[in-house]
Image (cartoon, rainbow, N blue to C red; front, side, top):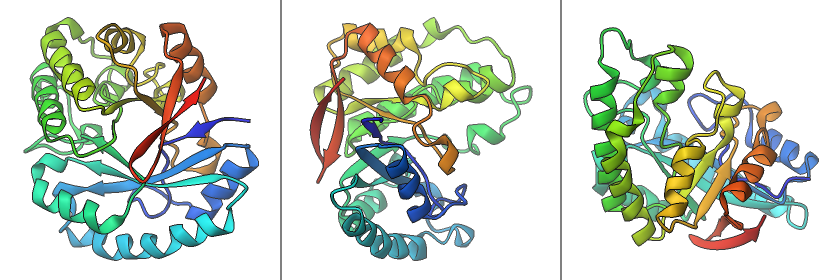
Length: 268
């Protein structure tokens, strides 16, 4: 039994292979009470034909409500979206959010202006210190815009820079940016996501890790969400128990789930 998993992807994501019902059924088998489907919507790639975003959004809009009805009384299905790079075109982002009737919006940044996704970058050719400066500036810009519910995996680039490439990063360099970022999301009642995917990847820790979660808590941050970032059924719920234990160790007493963009606090 797991209380929630609030960040997962289906075949409606460009990097997902498994259908929405297959993912929901696995969550139900695991006894997850609150389960969010949060497929990718990368704003800067919306118009690229290979991603078929207009078509996929229409399909998802018909499929997810049917699943919600089918599983009523069995699982609380949360219709979400992972909104990538919204500040690259805020007008488009706002229009698509208004058309989507979502319960829950994850805000994320997988790539900064002028660069590909951090997953694809060569960190011998691209200075990771400079990239992270730009990345945290873009997260701050996102927080200033603020039209999402939780800020996802804020150490996402470290998954590749540190975890996969083994390059050491002195995070104290970004302390002022991170403090500004946390101040903004606290002020705007935006949650901070504890993304448990790192626990099953080379980086070996949640995104963000304990130090940054403590900083957020010490600054007064109390709203958190938690998700596995699963792209396949076998990863649903992975790391959630460990994430809950970490959150409780730091002092958090609840995790937020969402309905119609309103937080519901689930005690942990």
